[in-house]
Every structure is written in C-alpha cells, then in structure tokens.
Image 1: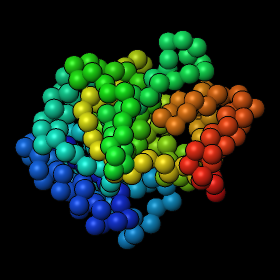
Image 2: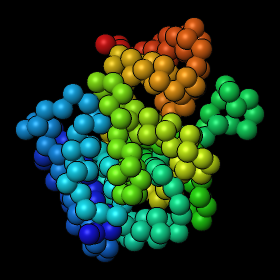
Image 3: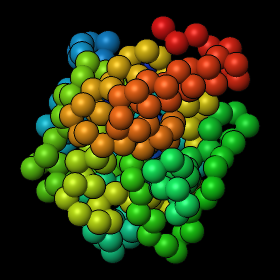
Length: 250
C-alpha cells in the first residue's frame, strides 16, 4: 500500500504526461502511485463510473482525484498534503471550495481557492496555510478522499454527467456531520480557465436538487432548493455567462 493514489481520467494522454505525470515526478515525496483512466479506450457515461473504475485499481491510503490539466509547481506539495491528511479528519478535501457567507447565508456564498487558473494564473482568496477551513462543497479539479471513506461510499452515478461529482460527494459528506468537507491550503495551477459549463451541467444540478432537496452550493454559484427560484437562478447565470464570455449554453 502507498500513501497516495492519484487517479486521473483523460482523453488527452499528451496533456496528462506533460502536466500530471511530470509534476509528480518532481515531487520529493515518492510514496504514491499514478493511475490514468484513458477515456478514449474505455467509454464511460459519467465521471462517477470512470473514477470508481480508477479507484478500484488503487492501493493508496488516500485517493486523489484530479484533472489532466493540473500542474503542481511546489516540489514539496505532496509532503505538505501528507502532513495535512495525517493531522486532520475529513471525508473530502479539495484545493478549492465554497463557504456560506455569514451574512444572508441562504443567498450568498464565498469562494476560497488555492487553484490559480489559466495562463495568467488568476486566483481567488487564498486559504491560510495554518488553518483548516470547513466548506460546503469542493471543486472537481483536485480533491482527496481517505480510502476507508471511499470504500464505504464510492461515487454515486446520480446523472449521466462529467460535472459536479465532487459537489455530490460533498453534499453526502455534509450530511454525516460538521468539518467533513475542508479546503487544502496549498496552491495548484489549473491550466484552463475552468469555464466548462454546458446544459448538461444545469441538468445535473437539477438532479442533485431533486435528490438532496436542499440548496446546492458550488464554486459556480448558489442554487436555491425551490424549483422556481432555482430556474430563475439558472437563467441569470446563463445570461451572465453569455454577456461576460459570449458563450452559448448548449
């Protein structure tokens, strides 16, 4: 058994090798394994199936799920993450997450992220490296689940989607108690701008709303549990994305 199993689904082996594999090779902490799930050779209808497949091959004490366009620049990242995992109890920990704001918590949320996006390395509010920050949900780019937790509760194929699987896991984790969803206080680089929203994303959101019957809080936005308010929120977000990014949601 190793400490970390890195599980990365990809349809671009060159990007996987250049970013994920090359980053891990530079780490001073060597007690890990890297599992690539080639989604061009194996066809999955949802991310949950691909990640569960990858996890079935893993032997690590901690399972790390990440995108193929993640770069780990700090060569001591795994050392720091190992220390963090050993000192803290959690069900899921991500490099980016969302918190409810203390004022009007039903209407507002705040993103805390240690992921910088795109070529310009744009970022959000960094998390204090000496603190453990509890979150409502974490982002899919990079997150960790202890093996003993995952064996009891693998990913739920709640919808045919490649979106929101970490949010779904966070919703389940929050039902188990406080401080089960936390943010990792170490910086990563996500090469893309993170804008991968399409109609399937909103359909998956609606599926989560029906399953959990509660507000859905994620790094994209806050979505009320009321169906009418939920639909109005989606209309607002689509208009926002169109006018700011000139993207049609299809």
